[in-house]
Image 1 (cartoon, rainbow, N blue to C red):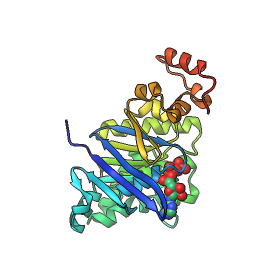
Image 2: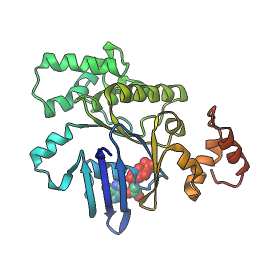
Image 3: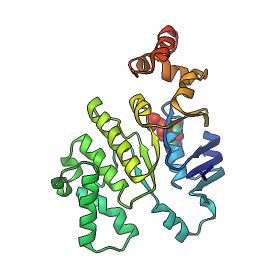
Image 4: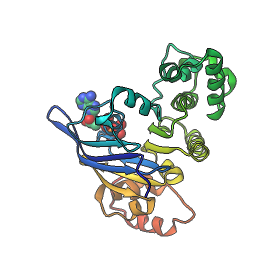
Length: 270
Ligand SMILES: Nc1ncnc2c1ncn2[C@@H]1O[C@H](COP(=O)(O)OP(=O)(O)OP(=O)(O)O)[C@@H](O)[C@H]1O
């Protein structure tokens, strides 16, 4: 088996007396599109930030592209950072910079390129995420919610990453916008061969673009596998999540049996 792109073992993260992650294990394989789910406040963002080295951990090992992040020299760590892109919740664009400048921010930080080349690259990234050329000179406050997401995705792709972290990419989008954004992620993943770690509450995204799903509860990954494994799980949180009232609205052509079993489970909490 190929070495995982992300490997987490025995991860503990606490804030004071509050233990958020407790001995968490997770592997993400090359090319995998992982949807990471869990109740609000369970620690999905904390895990993402710990993997990115932005949250200190109390115990455990995190390996990225086979490298133990605790054993890297600052120079090696910086080289590794260029191999991933992050789209933070809400986009987190720099409000005082134009879209073009936002996309070029990682290039300025990590690469030494001429302004002309950075302009060409920024135009390319805009095209890649389906934004019109005139979006380049706009400020985030002049963009719609959907355009902000696309601009944030373009910035996450600025350094041609192999690994993409997405924190609730479709939140706040209307269903059509969310479906278009899912399609965009799926297309980019295939054409660029990305590994994707996506925190989401969006059941449609899980059904339509994720190869596997990992669920977080009580500080641990309680299940990790394809959708069918999640649907078959007896874990109360997974049953509530995948067979609750909201889940029943989701229809798949091949899901007759699943829907029948969900419909019969009238007692499952939403
Ligand atoms: N810097 C911090 N200091 C103290 N507590 C924190 C810090 N960051 C996160 N927490 C706590 O850790 C817990 C997990 O937060 P996190 O944002 O990871 O949840 P989440 O699963 O991403 O939730 P949501 O789905 O609502 O975004 C919360 O109780 C939060 O208050």
